[in-house]
Image (cartoon, rainbow, N blue to C red; front, side, top):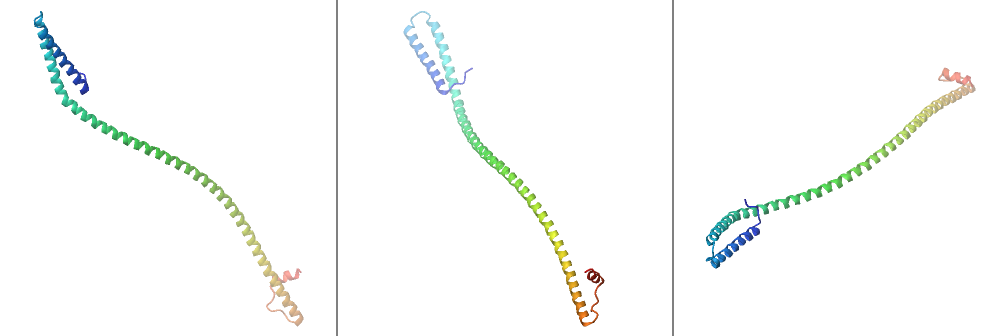
Length: 187
C-alpha cells in the first residue's frame, strides 16, 4: 500500500529508484564478469520490475493527484467563503449585541422616566383633587352668599315697601311672605 504523498515527494522517490537502477546497470556492466552475476541480474530484474510497478502506480496516481488538487482548491475556496460568511456573521452579532445593549439602556431610561411621570401624575392628581375640593367649597360659599344676598335684597326691598306704605299709609303690594315677616320681626 502506498502512503499518500505529495506529487513532489512521489517524483523524488521515482527519480531515486531510477538512479538506483542506473547505478545497478553500471555495476553490472563493470562487474559482469565477476561471480554471482546471475544473482545480481535476478536482483536487477526484480528492481526493474519494482521500478516499473512504481512508474505504473505513479502514472495511475498522477490523474488522481490532479483531481485531488482541484478538489483541494475547491474545498479551500469553500473554506474561504465560509470563513468570510463567519466573519460577516460575527460582525452582525457584535452589531446586534451593541444595538441590544442600547435598547436595554434606552428601556431602563424610559422605565425611570415613566416612573417619574407616574409620580408626577399622582402629585398632580392630588393637587387637582385638592383644588376640586376648594372649588366645591368656594361654589358652596358662593351659593350661600348668593342665597344670603337674595334674602338680604328681598328683606331690604320688603322693608322699603313697608316704610313707603307706612309713610303713605297704605298696605304694601305684593304682600310680604311669611318667611320675610318672620325674619323682619326678628330684627
